[in-house]
Length: 267
Length: 321
Figure 1 (cartoon, one colour):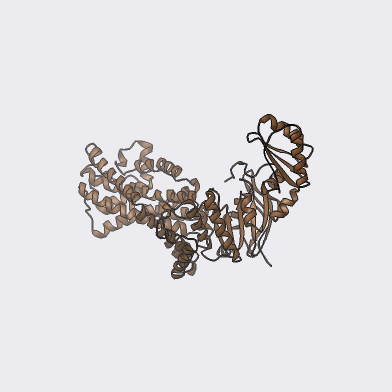
Figure 2 (cartoon, chains in turn red, brown):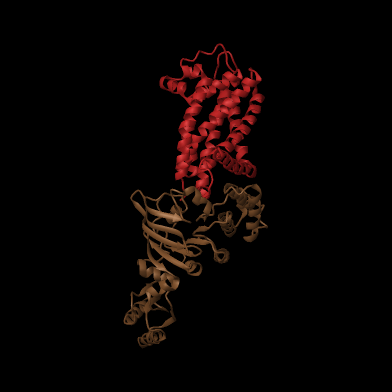
């Protein structure tokens, strides 16, 4: 038991260190919040006029998708942060200390989660300004936000593995862009998946990002009876599907990330 | 006296690259061992194996009596490591860096803070203590990194190229700090590419090349191993270099080293000042104009050249992953 307490304590020390960075280099937070704001405005005003969603304003539909995309991008910070730590040799120092093997990863994913919380708050305010509204109860809305954050948290463990493998923040950023863009666009985030052509539709239906988007849409009450009903089980039960993805991510990624950390050394 | 570090037949491979090839090393408690070798010789790999960052493929190693693999966690409590790149967090202040390290050694909140203050004082960083490390000079970063290695008062200290990349003044400052440090009785394993550094700091030097130790001894012993003295001279023209080489060939007890561009020759000789006089006479007889001439004891540079056939500073292929 005391090992777990100590591991959590070590994780907290590392998380605090990462949060100090946000404080000292505020540009990071500014730009990680500005880009989703830009996405909200671009999609709302550029595509908003062209994309028709039956029975509702596009902006209402859009927000859950933007939230999902943003927290997924937020999760990538975990990978680039770790890659940077390796590059700078900080991981060598950590690994020579008698601290818990999980601490650097727990600390990193936790501070990135907090970063995502701030980003989500700013985005919600932007959304409200462009006309998005929550139509569900307070607790449902809260559950919606919690689910988005939980999803991002689980995903950030996967990003950790990649970050520890590539060991350079630049390489990581390029690599993650290639993976994240299709993942967040071939989904129900910005368009209805039912309008996508064959193979893309199948991908979108089983894409975890679609599940979390549909779940958030449902929990925020941004749905509509005129929506065509989803064809697949995953999108008919999006909240449950998202939770299953979260568990799968954690079960697979956490041990792999810790294993990769134990091997990670800088050049 | 017990041995603080014992390594027997360490082998570490990266794919087909053999970084350590049966390395043996013994460092008695309270002494300073200098690990000397060019880039890619296996110095950093040795330090990483001994500090549990890397698992070796063959052989056995203990530090402070603890096995580097089986007792890795307990071992980490006993050691301090300061790496080749100052592993300090740029966004934290000097104080925050040391405080964090203290917390991760589980010294507790209060003790971590006290210790951070003590070390900042000792390493002359008090004024910069509350500024982010980003604004520190290279020398200050290294001092802070070294302070980080000392937070838990380790029994065995590892310094991997502590002065690489520092300007000469900061290097001298770093040497003072390290000397003061080991006066307290800490065991130290120091890696360096600088022969001068090993000569000044280490009790014993292990010369390492291609992943194993090729010579071991005190600086004096190593120099004696090479034998004799070195007659060093500069001449005016390229033509004179060739002629001087011929003329002095009879005096040399080993291979004459020629620096073509600098018009310099280094001739291994034995016999002291008589050889010097003899050499000058011979050059004079051939009317070779000598700009500069002197006799000196062999340096570790000469030792290296003799032992490995290549100079220490020579850049080899970068160390494998």
